[in-house]
Image (cartoon, rainbow, N blue to C red):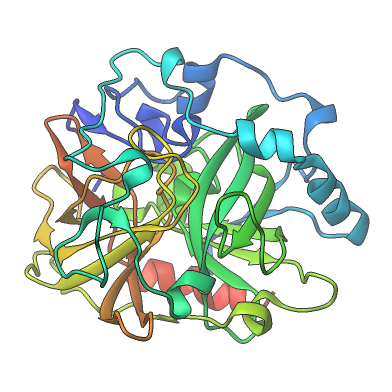
Length: 354
């Protein structure tokens, strides 16, 4: 169901998560106006983004689909759009939202660093990832344009037949009932401005109708198909993670599951320059969604990053069962992720065929 809590830090919809580049901290805005439209008050300029302003809804497949950079010229235009200056400027816009509360740093050093951390922990609250492994390559930073503004999110490569499928948050692809993202670009293994494995533009974005029509927080997930980079699919370039759609019970109350969540938080005390992680055992959301929560201090920009179950810190391999989605204003130390279930499976199956 859609959450009715009025003090939700809603990365999607009402708290303009995309306007904050990820997790956002604001009271819920009234429907049906777009969150980003209300927060930013700006119209899209055709000269500033690339993509098709077209939504395809399939009632049979249960998928809301948007074509993006579907030609080589369109893909190159997106790559050209993201100059170093634009990438550096794509950050949360906290000054334009009323009711924004500061995220607590929980004692973290600037950019979330922790002194003398030598190995991964099972109870991290947002430290910089201290190891290597597959997760450092398959997780990446996302750059996107929404309603004429440039923002950041996080995403992960998942194993798929087309070798070009990513999972991220729904609000990192579409502003709930509002606009679809444009200029969507994935930078795997992003680190301090470097793109060691290239950049991959989106060709297709898919969200659940429950997200595109109702901005239902329980369905804040998306699949994004990306173009090749110089003819190489992203999965061939960096590898991929397993994804599962049966990790949670039907009633959504399963708790105590050990998870690891990864992303690129960019609001204070973080700078969005390095991969960070949270780890711990889950608790069910009691605020009106079927999401699960874990203790975490990561801030805006980490939205869309993968939640792993059965994660091996030594190899960086695991099974993606959720993505970073939202927090609550009265509990800013707990991060929530939606259950990936049958609706997410439909998106994945459709994406893998594109």
